[in-house]
Image: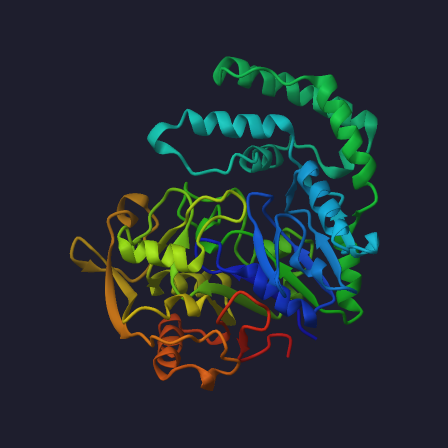
Length: 430
């Protein structure tokens, strides 16, 4: 038996969707444990490109149970649109294959309005939020004033909590942010309509998951974003508002830590990030643009161009440590195929001194200088390789060097966007 957590090992956008899609073949339950529709997974199935924002990638496989856990914040409108689109393409033939935790928190219109207004007033201190209301919803959750899915399904409770929320939110919108207030009746009517659809999928998912695991079924846990965007362990405040690290898989789903057997970190063969914040290996030249264009580095949710840079071993070693990674899935190796020389950051210096670990303070992190090692490129198309031995010698050496620098085994190598363009070196499901 194996239960596997898949976590982003960098700043997100590492290709988790594809890896989860591949590992789903070996799992029974696929569990999304944090984040909201501020993230997206892009998958290529045959010639079809599919983008998912909330529903786990496992929904593309028949006979699998997909769970959206209590650690997720749900925008009902986005969720229902995803369901409708998937059903329209012949997927989700059985509603029982998709479950929503009754304890997850619901994103409300005022969350999005506050999110956008705050960011607009931030000037040069913008976080880079997507404006989806994720942060404000998590604020209400932690502040013990949020609206959970179980509340939405109870008309009396929802009306009471909505009115209480608007007393505070409308004051903030009008007096602090200079925005128009939200209308109680309009929101009540809109969300009652959502409740009529959502009730089909609501369950005590923590209990269901626990029973499945005890019966011998295998669970695959997927998060959104990446380790360096974790609210506790990321480049704060340029982070998301939830626990993206492996520990979040338990708090965000109700699974026991003793149920987790493997933790796989997804890492690109280079690095990207979206939004503001420190990024020591960022390339602001033609090389960075080449990575962006060749890798299609534009956000699946926002379309924003991603910042691109060379692989950063300091970041990956940190991710190995804080997540307890048992393996690394290396994605987009093919994007590097046109380079004569490929650089790898093996460390940082700050004011002339070598650093042992990622600095916790932004004032230091933003001034770190990367120490590079140069490796020869392979200048060959590798998208048809299906075994490690079929890769050019220099590509093999590059992978092995990253493995050595990370101090963790590389268990999968992706050489293209399709499912079949994948080399599995070790299957964490055994």
